[in-house]
Length: 144
Image (cartoon, rainbow, N blue to C red; front, side, top):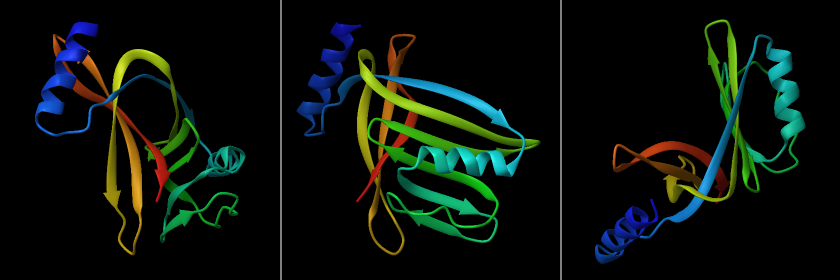
């Protein structure tokens, strides 16, 4: 795998693109059936990010109180860990994503412009599948 990582880095650098970092992205998920339990996990996690409620989307600063309402989706981050929430039929899926040292994945930094100003920063992990590098999973890594 190391040879193919080096080959990919050479191709990207030759095209003037940012080379990825080696990493390991660990994903743990759980299903939750009650909105109160989702809110409890969001509050316990803390961090910064965004929260989509049934009537609005809110940007969350570090240490900010969680706004009232039923969460539909959210992405929070603190350091090398993120919590992503998505409502599905019958409840919500909560995924904790943690970046660790390792060489199972290649992590690329991507930025998304936010309407109203600022950027969402994501780490997108690629993994080798059938001899080709492909995007596998992404996590919110910060707000700018």
